[in-house]
Image (spheres, each protein chain N blue to C red):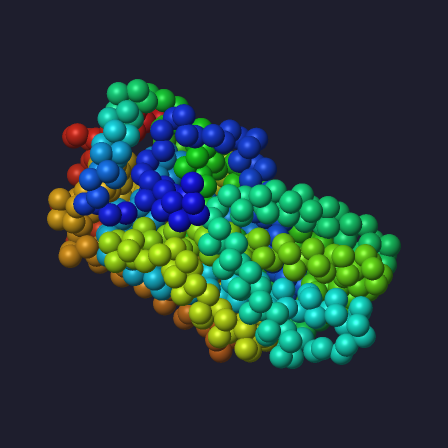
Amino acid sequence: MSANEDVAKEATFGSLPVLRSERVWNFTDFTWVNVGLAIATWAFLVGGSTAALVGFQKGLAAMVIGNAIGVAVMLLGSVVSSQRYGVEQYTLLRSVFGFGGVAVLVFTVVLFTEMGWSALLGVMFGRATTQVSNQVFGTDIGPNALPVTILALLALAIAWIVLAKGPLTMRFLNRIVSPGLALLTVGMIVLVLTKTSWNDLLAAKPLNPFPSEGLNFALAVEFNLGVGLSWWPVMGSLARLTDRPRSALWPGFIGLFGATIVAQVVGMAAALTLGDPDPTVWMVPLGGKWLGMLALLFIAFANLTSLTSIVYSTCLALRQAGGELLARFRWEWLTGGFFLLPAIISFWPNLLYDRFLVFVTWSGAFLAAICGTVIADYFVVRRQRLDLRGLYAHRAASPYHFTGGFNLSGLISTALGAVAYVVLYNPQTLDTLPAFNWLTASVPAVVVAAVAHIVLSRALNRRHLAPAVAGAVPVTTHKES
Amino acid sequence: MDVKDSALRAELDRRLVTLERDESGDPAHAPLAAADLWLLAAIVVALTIAGWVMA
């Protein structure tokens, strides 16, 4: 089967409900999938950025609080419904936002969030490889120099070629990278512990804090909340392949909370020990010239596989949300078009990389509001019952057509949640209200969006809220617990 | 998904019929139990409190 056929099959049939025989992951399988996802190079970057704000103990506390809440909210907003109905999340979201509303979200929040992550990974590839050049050839290439941009563009080009070859090539690369990153994490733990003592680690000062200690901790919590929420765009599509509700929820929490914390803590410890938040700077001082170079080359390679995974799932979502228009685009052109903005961003390597906190919290503002709306819709408004046939019906024939394809309740609620976030904490100006230090911004955003959706649904969508029983598939008539 | 694609609609209908006929009552389609939701909430609250104490 050619790459195009492979992708076309997944992009079209991938949006259909899976059958029992296709649910291939049990509890253990899905735990390993999530652990593999969690131990990625960006976890080191998160650890380094947390160390910029707070010391080790407060950083660990911020990671525990932020990831626990963020991952739990994200799981309830994506994997629970996808697991039950065996359907990827962008199709299920039609019940929350309408057909057109899903397209709006995919082409704005999801697209720009994933483009940002792609640009970050490209620049990280550039910085890792220029560090290798500095060691081997004695060059003195700075973190924002032109060669970093050129190598970032090379990373995007390689990722494009891998994507064009289809998902099988990506799966092969991921099988090498996941165990390798776990090994790298363990190696870093050993090396960090040989470089510093436990007492020195606890006494290490944050790298670049703001004057207010309370604000630094609140920002660190908010940042880690954003990190937990940032899994949302990809998790529903994975969870539909699990065999039980518990096989989706708990492995998600174990992997994305537990394994993420380990990798982030290692990153934070390395950053505090070496005095730099950038993971590409740590490897040579930690491992020496040759081991450090090997680690840097592996990080560069690992970034390529993360990059292809992100772009693959996002472009599939674009195809599914884009309807007939994007279905006509050749896969190579669609993925190529996706790389355009990350390529432009690569000319300013520090734009997102050195403002990682700002980027993560901006995307967290929208993802928190989306999750709040989705949780309220699935658990409260629809009481875990959806009309599976209706999700696939054509336009006005679907109960999820709402107003011209847009569920105004879902969209307005999400907007209100995002506004609540920005009022409490503006990621651009860093202005905060006093309540931010206690409530964070993401948690109120989830609550505001959820309450607004419950109220607005009752007011605007009374006729769409009848229980989905008549003519429905058995999943909607299963005995409720 | 192109809802007017006849091959796709046929595959969708086949799957919906199979779900209706063969998978009724399958535990894969059960709703998430309330006990799991409460346990998740309790773990998150416990971790949040532990975090605040640690900070």
